[in-house]
Length: 469
Ligand code: NAD
Image (tube, rainbow, N blue to C red; front, side, top):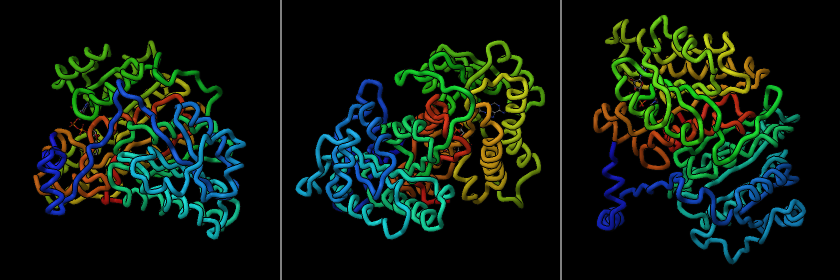
């Protein structure tokens, strides 16, 4: 789907008109392109008292090859940061406010243990936010509040959520702001997540809180950052079109062999998509009673490493007008089929140890939606599945997570009446709908071998939508 308003206000004439009429001007988001550097420019680093994650940040900065500068207002910790080999310079007061100078702002708040210690956050973002360029990135790092040993520390760490979400709303210009809670001992599992949130791959992910914990299983596999999924096999349901086709394409670009599943009536589109990706097409209705056994049989010989439950349908009506069939059909395809397929793949050991399950939920499953009792029930159920299964799969090193898309430009959202569609597009911090690739890239991060410490999480891909926020 084409967002004509976004295109218009980013044309020379449209930009002038929007300025003179005071209309909102959504930014053209910078998205990942293989022919452009993924990371560049200068990142500013700030920290609160006794930061624990400076080594982690130093590793990241070296690994992605960006320049880092220390923020002077953090005073005492500058020599400390130097000891970590982090800084090549210092972000001076004179530079503060120079637009576009910085590509990211990173703040290590992991040592903050009391609300009286929150002030450096104000100092850092007060001085640096205006210097952050278009489509810049903000990442705040903390410790999971629930793991803190005192109520004061829990309180102060929990407070970081309000700060981060507000920064996402204030920054505009395509800037994203996200909070990453790193459990003690899980520092080695953070790089894939920090890379994702710093990269143009996370263009439409903002206002999110992600927890990184210990990796389950026995060993972390070696991988290459350019082709992290090389040698891995990924199943994607609903892969013939829309978000599913984009997921298949991104996973294949990362090196995976993709097995796409879709209904028999979509066979032609599915086969054409899979052919372009050197993948395999399986025409199955995932809700058919025999589907789990057939899918398991088709995958049995070579096994599978990644399962993406993307297929989903809507049959919207207010509940008084909703037929029993419309209710049942939506629950069955969007939720029941996922449960049955996972049961078959897990019981048969077809999903290998160290595997990844990613399910597609929706912000409707978080907020509820008029006319979508069936859909929202199914999508909230997906969240429950992820939360309940994660601890059981940990010992085998299998992670399970969900993405909850907001308004994404696909054939599904093209069916929405114009006025509601326009509201869905604009009611978020990016003032625009997302693209299928935004969901696909988020799934690729969760499917990444380096995301072993990320499990049981629900990540919204919604441009920080006001719905359900
Ligand atoms: P879409 O309708 O464009 O594509 C869905 C695909 O799933 C189709 O190819 C369809 O044939 C397939 N499918 C449907 N029922 C199936 C079945 N029984 N067996 C096998 N395949 C089946 O939808 P989309 O917009 O690409 O949505 C993909 C997922 O994202 C869905 O789960 C949807 O609920 C979710 N989602 C979408 C949005 C959005 O804004 N588009 C927002 C939130 C969540």
